[in-house]
Amino acid sequence: MDKINGKLLVNKNLKQAMSQFTLLKQKRFFPFFLTQFFGAFNDNVFKNALGIMVTYTIVGDSGKLLSIAAGLFILPFFLFSAVAGQIADKYEKSKLIKIIKFFEILIMCIAAIGFYLESTELLFVVLFLMGAQSSIFGPVKYGYLPQKLEKEELIGGNGLIESSTFLAILIGTIAGTLLITLEGYFAISLSVILIAVIGFLSATAIPNTPAVSPEINLNLNIITETYRNVKFLPKNRVVFLSVLAISWFWFYGSIFLMQIQNFSKNILFGDEKVVTWLLSMFSIGIAVGSLMCEKLSGKRVEIGLVPIGAIGMAVFGWDLAITSQNWHVLTELIPPSEFFKLDNSYRILIDMTLIGVSGGFYIVPLYALVQERSDEKHLSRIIAGNNIINALLMVTASLLALFVLTYMKWSIPQLFMITVALNILVSLYIFTVVPEFLMRLIVWVLISTIYRVKPKNMDNIPHEGAALLCCNHVSFIDPLILGGFIRRPVRFVMYYKIFNIPILKWVFKAAKAIPIAGYKEDPKMYEHAFSEVKKALDDGDLVCIFPEGGLTPDGTIQEFKSGIERIIDETPVPVIPMALNNLWGSMFSRKDKVLDRRPRKFLAKIGLNVGEAIKPQNANRNKLFDEVKRLKQGSND
Image (cartoon, rainbow, N blue to C red; front, side):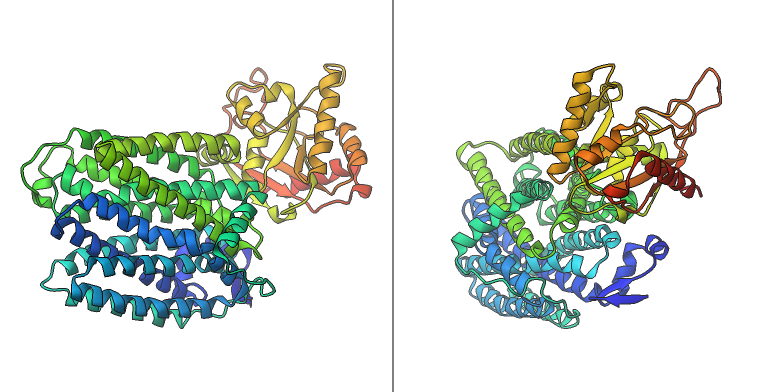
């Protein structure tokens, strides 16, 4: 084992065997893990103590006050994130974290004064300062991870961070509720200061993390830098739409979380302890979903889990709204012991849990995708842009809740229904515009139920720039398998009859696949396909062609057609040979059922072997045929 820039370098086999929990034993991760945990824990101890104080002890419109409180915490993310992103890229991160955590101690001292004076106004100021501190920490937090973790560790590391964050919400909820109900405010005041001190001490053990862009000039103008930051995001389309999806998650989640205390009190007629149960189940669900991501994704950044999460958020969110809308009408608040005796009480808790699990499936791969696909020199500023949009949508969520509940006089379950309906529309838009999500979902289902794919040497595919991928053609779903494992969008050139397969056609079309026919079949389609390939390569895309011109009839590699040489001559780019192995005879391959009535392979172990790039001047169909054949033999176990 060696270290470079704080990363622990191990051989690939050992990486695959290592669990994400191994990171908790390593200095590059564990002190940072503790620091962010105690920060999130302290945020929630304070916020939930203040929420209970507002909901149960202050006379007035608690729903309005809670919406204002949520907006005050989120507003600094909109104001300060752009500047924070610059700072995170320009300076060494461990020192920044220590400074941020020191200011948390000062903020919590002000909170103690607010509790002592029983001043809601001062505590709301503290809430704003906490939001400011968190807005500065966010870009540092997500910029730190890819500097210290290998790509294979990103999904596991993000899963641990997200699960611990929501476990901090759970423990903070319980602690905040218990502490605020004790006689006087000494216990809550002392606790938030001590937690801040512990977080600062853990930050002192975080290893040095060099600045990624020390040369940048700071622009402290909040307005112009925020505009520049948001304007920069769309340059990488997949990252930008992933940021929008992340921001939507926080819109959705904030609607549920900021109303959960009023939901418990005014809809379910539950006391403070019922609030704790609801938040606990949601937090446990997020933690479980986040930790499951590494296992389900096989240590890859598997965005195929994102549509599953979106579907779960819609289904279980709607069920929660419907179930609670028809809830029992009671005359007084009840404790958990009485709540659990009511019909559908467990259904409410199950819905909260599964919303959380779905949220974990949704958010962890998205954060990992942003970290993997972004230029590391701009990552913290991209995260800052993400936080700006997050803040904008979360403030919008507060305004929506205020409008629906206060001015429209609708119920909280109706607010949940509106949120779920919007979730469906936003998800359909994102998954239509970026079909890679749905393609990877299909592939994930295939490799989890029908195939077991073992890829080799995927790093030979360039992370940016044009290249021509050349692969043997064995089954109708070869493009799905390849597209699911290649970490960049790929334009596939495929025989038009495969392109037009029902159901799969809309996936291929959304992925901008290029249908092609033989020259004698359709000269116009033939020429149009080559024109589209040239345009795609000129734009810097990956294009994948199956040079055999059709599916193999017997499992062997067929002679390569001359079309691949035409592509290379018209647009000289590196050519990456690839080979699929052991697909013949499996589901979706063209196996002759008349000559061979043996059952098709189920759970077949498929090999995907990627060769080194070949310069265009050295590439011809015979050389590529030999190389693909060699790779196919080399992918055998």
